Length: 268
Image 1 (cartoon, rainbow, N blue to C red):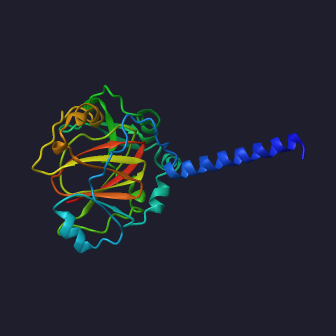
Image 2: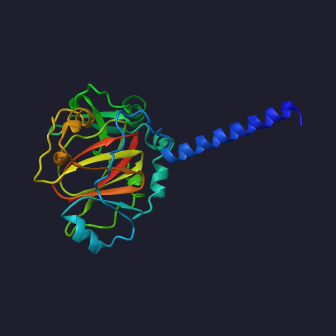
Image 3: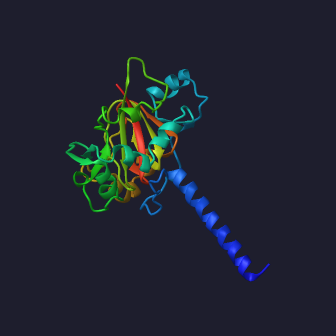
């Protein structure tokens, strides 16, 4: 075999391996391009319990529903919904539809309407460290259920409900380093479809130290490091396919470690 033939074969092997890696990466992130340059990463130790699909409704009610958060894995199969949330697919279906963006601060939510494609191309960027929450536009909730209804019909929410409640969806897509600062409301679930989302939680009787107009990223970099161990939040990073349940009135803040696609089911 000649040297030329050897080089030719090696080139084809290299191209094939590169294509395989690209295909795997695209399959993993849905074309949303995981961001590995986030200024913060996953926590050193997750302090939220993880349970598998074998968890029963009785266990959920007795151990978590009114007491503490829990992460549940493999309890639903949302592979079809996940496929529909690929970047190329969403842009093709909803690119020219308007979406409503909210400011990422705690007590006031200004609204801005932009086409979905414009949001993806111009707003879906890593968080600016110096931006205030009031200057940060975030796509989460305020979904038009008429226009996006066909997508939500393909989503299978977690099967466990609290007695007397129904579920309402909030769908979102956000860039690395973005998130919502501390706030509270009723109970619910949050599932990551693509990317990773880091959560910080406090029980209702423990109000966190935070500036309501600063971003979660600035809180993470400035306030979090100086908190005594006893004052640190319960925290964990949820990944694609995992569902976090949070009880009623628990304080929580979120921080997207990658470009993330996610959906919450609020119980009310």
